Length: 174
Image (cartoon, rainbow, N blue to C red; front, side, top):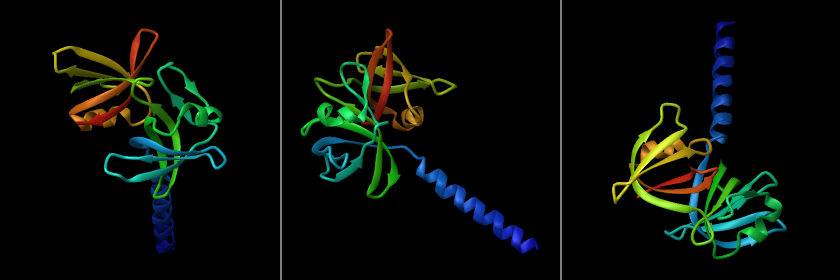
């Protein structure tokens, strides 16, 4: 009986760890090389030449310079081949589903380079000091963003301005 209970507990723990691993949010930064609205996929090529195929859904948010999120039905129109993006996704290997697509550059999110000085106790704010000594305080958007800030040290922060506040969408280590 003890062995059956022990086996059940171990099996349950393994099943939970596999389930929890699927909830990990990862990100890829690169240039869109293909958008296929029929299959709701896009290919993002990173600086090192790696290509990532990512699926998008009706729930995928697309952020750009207009400071609003568009639904995935507009993704093919809002994100074109040649766009620089950061795609936040869940999944493993070739099976990646986009949660959010952030457009960067002239028509996308703003950015600041600097050093992460402080992450708020609740993980909802981050202070970044730029090279000129200016401190920028950001509200943190999205699961895992504050954790990324803690790990980066020197970083580029991509953000929107909403209601007079800077909202960090993505941190990239320098």
